[in-house]
Structure formats: C-alpha cells, structure tokens
Image (cartoon, rainbow, N blue to C red; front, top):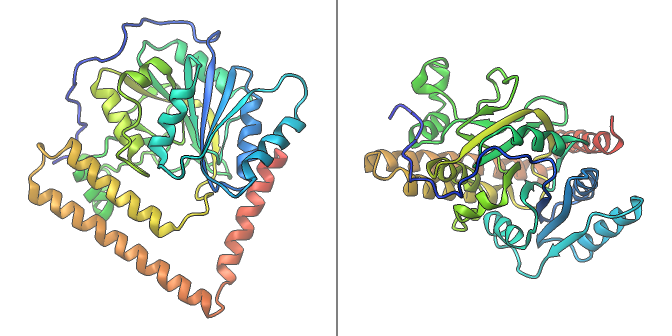
Length: 345
C-alpha cells in the first residue's frame, strides 16, 4: 500500500497509429453547462477565437430559461465574419458530467475532441499550441493544458498522481504533513511540485480541459457514465493508460479556470465526490487492497464529508445571524476576478 502507480495493462484497444500531423485536423469543442452563469459567455468567446475549432457543442444539463439562447445570441452578435457553429444538446435534464461528455462526443464530427469546462478560459492561440505539441506524440494520447487560478498560480488538480486508496487515505488524514518528502506519503495533487518545462507524461490530469483524438476517446468507450460527478476524469485517465494510451501534461498552454461557478449545493457536490471516489476504488482496486483497509478509507472519506457538512451548516447559521461580512468580501473578490479576465487585464 505504498501508493505506487496502478499500471496493469489491459492490452491496447486503440487503432494502430503513428506520429501524425495534427495542425490540419478539425476540432470539436465540447462544453457541459449546468447553471454556469456569466462565465459561459466568456468561455464560448475564447473558443471562437480558436480558428482550429470547427464546431462548439454545448451540452445543456440545466440552465435558467433563455440563458443559453441569450449567450449564443450575444456571441453571434459580438463577432465578425463567419461564426463557429454552436450545437446545443438539451432536454435531457441533469444527467451528470460523464454522460453529458459522451452525449457531446457522439454528436461531434471533429478529428479531435476538446473537452473544456464552461468556467475555463482558453487563451488565444492555445489550441494551436496543443495541436502542435500533440503532433509530436505517438497515438494514442490525452493532452491537458496547465490550469491556473485567476491570479496566475497553478491550480490544484492541474497535475495529478495515480489515485489509490492509500493515497486517498493519506490525503484524508493529512499524513503527508508528518513526512512530506517520503514516497509513501506522496500527495495526489502535484501542483506544488516544480512545473515541467515541456510536455510531460503524467498518470492523471484534470477533466476541466483536455484534448484527445476522437477515435481514441471512443476506443475505450468514453467516460464511465456510472460516475455522476467527480472521479470520472481520474477513472478515464487510468482506463486510458491501462488500455495502452498515454496521458500528457502541457505547460506551454495556461487555461484560467474558475471553480464553483455552478449554482449547486456545495454539500451535494461533496457527497457526489465521496460516492464517486468509493466507486472508483471498488472498480479498480478491490483485488489489490485488503477489504478492511478499503472500509477504513471509506470511513475516513465519509468522516471528512461530515466535517465539511458541519462547517457548512455552522457557516449558514452564522449567516442567518447576520455575520456575512467575510462571505461578502469573498464574493466581491470573485466578481473582480471575473471582471479582470473579461477585460483582458
């Protein structure tokens, strides 16, 4: 239980491919939106500044009435010349992130799929760089940009190790504080490690933004739809690697990622995350770890959820008592961050 990478190969499921030129291939951008708010317009605007994108597929898992039409209309009116077509998939309700990604992929016609969150801003020229860097790699591959906070610092989750039950236990219990340099206590998120200078293979990247050849995505069946929210990207990277693919991190492109943009209960998100992690461990590690240890990991994760729920409840109680000054300052700071990105500062 030392947190070593889970590397048992299932045998390659991918079409035989060698190096190929990516610059002239078309890209379908897939965006899953759930009550995203004003950042959606900014994200779509950034995508429309990428000439390599042949189409944008917006999967509407739920938004305010007229919100999506308004955003698409505003985008169309703000650009000159030919418009990147936007296909909206709607009417299915909130089916979860993994299922929505697969819905978008099935509708896509591009040679490459760019999955990007509706609160992520791809810099101008960013996709061209990803495609050029991907052209230097042997298929199959997944290539993810560097995720940064609005202040420019690298975001937690941008680079990741393989998530094992032991590593989750280390994170939940904060054992890494006792021996931060010991390999047995290596953390899941690697954003505090020195950032690589060039494209680097990694066990896992974030699902907030990544590029993958459409054939390779389909070859392993896309995202596992049994994950409603969270852990689907971790599962995807592990299945992709086990099937003979490679996952890469590209520090040459920095994508600004705003977190918690959707109008959804934070406790619901944490509950979904905990449930997804336990499913992930059950699928991939039930034969490698003793069952009592998996029970211990599950108990630790649910205990952590209970602590977060208690803190959230206390915060709400204090809010009802009128102690909202700190929350107000946080909201003002976030509004200023969004405004600065919109203005290009």
